[in-house]
Image 1 (cartoon, rainbow, N blue to C red):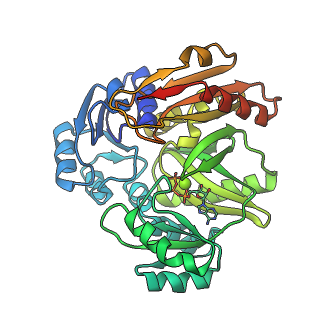
Image 2: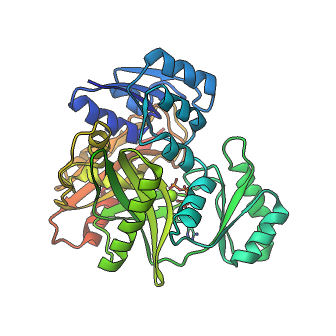
Amino acid sequence: MAKILLLGSGELGKEFVIAAQRIGQTVIAVDSYENAPAMQVAHAFEVINMLDSDALDKVVAKHNPDFIVPEIEAIRTERFYDYEKQGITVVPSAKAANFTMNRKAIRDLAAKELGLKTAEYRYATTAQELRKGVLEVGIPCVVKPLMSSSGKGQSTIKTEADIEKAWEYAVAGSRGDVVEVIVEAFVKFNSEITLLTVTQNNNRTLFCAPIGHRQERGDYHESWQPARISDKDLYEAQDMAEKVTEALGGAGLFGVEFFLADDGVYFSELSPRPHDTGMVTLAGTQNFNEFELHLRAILSLPIAEITLEKTGASAVILASENSANPTYTGIEKIAALAKTDFRIFGKPSSRPYRRMGVALTNDSLETPVEEVVERAVKAADLVTVNS
Ligand SMILES: Nc1ncnc2c1ncn2[C@@H]1O[C@H](COP(=O)(O)OP(=O)(O)OP(=O)(O)O)[C@@H](O)[C@H]1O
Ligand SMILES: [Mg+2]
């Protein structure tokens, strides 16, 4: 049986550990704080700063895992290349994890090397350079720190007067030592999707049915599966997903994000790991959920097919206040609903907008997806996180 070192122990990691436990694997869960969700279900845990290379090296040497499975971006991923040389499998590959922790590496790979269609973009290391970039890509446009996630430091420029504050906001929201931003033309998309893509060792690449989602304040609020998309757009997205995952290498599940606009499909970005919008697969929409797929691909267990079994939706349950001992009310109300399920992640503390749980709904494939989403939103509203 394999020994897996999980770097990042949030709710996505927790579901991954549960999937691994079910087929007898050993998992050591790592995060920067104790009692993180995935630690609660793992064999062992470690608390370190994963951006600290020495601390990372020590944990890897101590456990000598077969696999390193990153769950987050904020890790000293440069070290992954050495771990690979030591014979450890970094999931899906050291390159995939390292390229996606910085928007520049993945965007240049996608747009320049692979020729995928993306929003027009420029980089900037000063407010003056940003001004130049903004004028080149045009207004409106979106500014993001090269290193950030969950919309941190991201803002939309609507007039030239916004440039200075967009720069300052991006610098303040930047993670790590890089002070550089990307400015992208605003894509007037009709919808956005996540295409969960599974690359396998010695087997073909598989796609899940596309997942639709709605973002607010940089995080997703609802996701649903299947998303409405034309066959033409779907094939285009699948073709782009196949190209970019192949270039990154390795086996595992990727969440590839696209914008669907009047003038076609735009590649946006990707996670080389289960995606938060993919929690909808916990609603029983597929024969395997995204965590089981990731695990099977990693372990080189052949996946014959991915089937869509039901229409489903997920809606997040957020905290509204700071608490060192969050409690929940309304659980019995959500439990009473038909074709509805939920997860409470067991996070030891809350803060405003922190994701604490998720409501999950499903129905037959004939049911309009909007109805299933509406039920998920109402179900999530029944639960309150108390401080
Ligand atoms: N160029 C763009 N045009 C229009 N909308 C955009 C653009 N870039 C980003 N957005 C919107 O902002 C959201 C977040 O952007 P992006 O995925 O790049 O950031 P992120 O911080 O990595 O988010 P996450 O980590 O939550 O996926 C997108 O899902 C989309 O709704
Ligand atoms: Mg994103």
